[in-house]
Length: 415
Image (cartoon, rainbow, N blue to C red; front, side, top):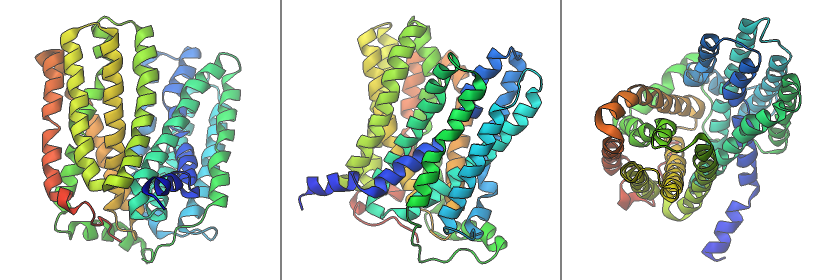
């Protein structure tokens, strides 16, 4: 079989379809407790300070590693360790989303907030299990593509629970919107029932204490543990800082909000999804390690296009080019980054270790966004994006330790 035919067969395989649909199920609840919920609260005339506090309902997404050991240790009495939890958590998430839609924010906003926290808790929990399922279901050479397809499904779900939900809310009551979104969870539920349980040779932790302690001990016994953590913290640093201020930057250059929506949002989302899928396909040929080098370089170039736009000013063609280039690079780099994080987990503790890594990424996103405005004011837009480009360099240098170019064909798996 030719390399092209083999690649096409992998892309069209049942495994990739499962990744797409589980990615959709994973991403669907996110905006229903985020921007979509904020739109509903605004329609209900809830004051802005209260709406701002609703951001706290997303806290479970950043601390999900705290209860992830339970998902590694406890095996449900049906469908297996991963599929059993996937089914249970998706059913509960669907019920919680439907319950949220039946509430009345105008009369009891704090009850709405409480149920929204329930939704995010079970949504974050299913994310942990989906990540473990993906890692354990795919062979190492398909991990990059599978991660890209999963992320593509996740972002498709965000379009459904974001843009589509808002469009529906102009035509039908919010209660009906949330009931429809709850019904969309059936996509993941049916997929869970039809797919296979991953086959893992390593037994699950025998006790809860072992499930909590051993993932950390096993990881820090590795010779390159600190280098891996440094890489996770630094590889996306510059890219995260650049993307944190995209909206105010574009508006500050004099582009209208309509132009922002048409170019930055529509073209940006398409390029982001396309970049992830392109990155996944390329990883089949390049492997994860070499992809991290190449896609990391692409991220630097993507950031530099923002510096060029800042110098040129309000040029529509350059804005479109910049948004497409940066999002393509962001999508490719993000896919390789997520695949690498999955590849360095131990399959006995996949849920716990991957949840810890992804929480570290979330912490980087929060702490880099906080000072970004001060830095942009101090340096100007051109200086700010040049600084972001420079901040990508430490993460690339660490690749020498964690993903050497000459070891591209060696497995990074820890099972």
